[in-house]
Image 1 (cartoon, rainbow, N blue to C red):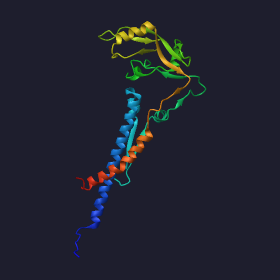
Image 2: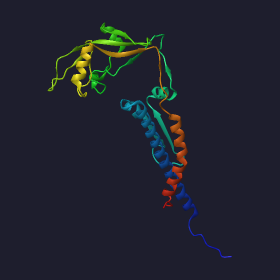
Image 3: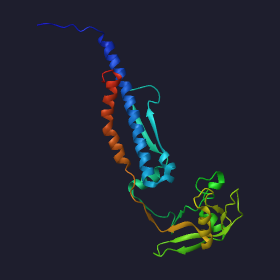
Image 4: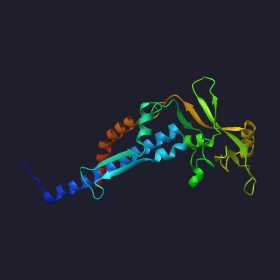
Length: 240
């Protein structure tokens, strides 16, 4: 029988392997946490549209430990708008609170100078402001299920070098954006109607199930072991 000697420091070799494992665990957890956050953000923008970028970007993540590496590395992904996410994941039925009869849902017209406005120029008119103005009026839906809450519309002074029309809703807010495509034709159309819808009043709203947070989380957990093994092989210098 021929014996082969093993030369080296076993303790040192094991210590190096553990350090490689620690780096691999932290690397794999970080990559999978980032991948999960990206998938969840993508779900929001794909399902709710481009104007939901704020909700999409509300998905945040954190890796633990915050500094250094560890075999027990962990990742956390959470949303700063949990109620919105929960509602669209469950397909929730939303009803008025406090004994109210209707939900007041702001329309896309209800923002001074558009939803990208700056400072108080981008704030929505509130139901309280609608009531205080004394100019709000209702138009019923044909279905009879709710109402459109409107303000009378008037033309303000032309503004800017292009002399674009300003639309003023009930003296409360400016409507629309200066960069809207075909803005003048759009403005004339609204002026002909003489009103602008500011809120939809509905007794309840059934939200469609549009998000799959649980599914995304389970997929991330299934991917993590393979990612960890590949990272450990790379950190130990054994990958091809």
